[in-house]
Image (cartoon, rainbow, N blue to C red; front, top):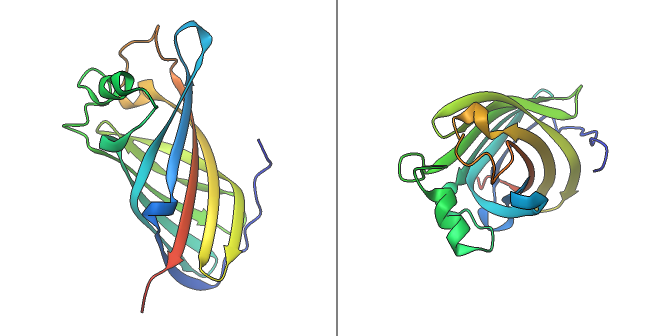
Length: 169
């Protein structure tokens, strides 16, 4: 894993997530030590920058969680685990300050909100916007997802690859 990126924010600006170019990738240890990998689309989000601080929001679409195994995906969406019928999305709100390389905020999964820090690993500016990669590790038990501890480990590593584009005037 690379070291955190140092990001110099513009003084002002408003960006939205480009959903077709953004996703959360996750991995966890599964049964017999193999690694389960998957993705969750980032449905929407925004970044508003003012005076060296950025306010960040994001919503992820749990109904579209994908691991490459339909049976496993169905099980993940079931009431036993993520209960997508009751909790169809994951949300994040946070603040990035110029003096650090992380976003501190609140992650809400399965109806539970937990303080979570995203470490910014990569930042690529280009004429069409900004691409960011950030990582975190979450403990699914903190969100009330406690079923099948022998099948899925408690800690989930998450990498967010997010494309931000300016809001249209």
